[in-house]
Amino acid sequence: MEITERENGRKWKADIDPVAEKDYRRITKKRYFFNWKKEQKHQVLKLSLKDKDDILGLMSLELIPAEFRIRNHCWLYLLKMLEEQASMRVLQAV
Image (tube, rainbow, N blue to C red):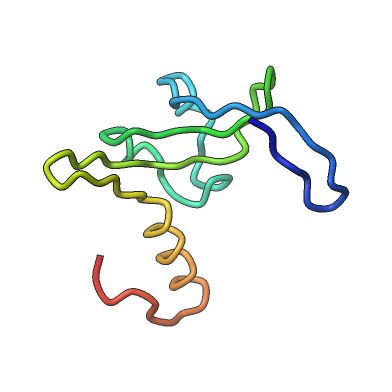
């Protein structure tokens, strides 16, 4: 796939791959905003530039076959983070 750098329009080749066990040592709460190790029970994917080791982003997906749906956990964490930073209630229930 290809991603575009917003500041200058430069295009980069990128990959989306499952997070490997060894990746979790580099995925810190400080850099990625919450403890991704809690998501290991779900399918966690990483976005990285092709042939580079740095992880640009992460996504956690929960497969729910009985309901024919996939739940994206990233949005829930983003809303929780915004709620904490703004000291306001964004979510009613999770």
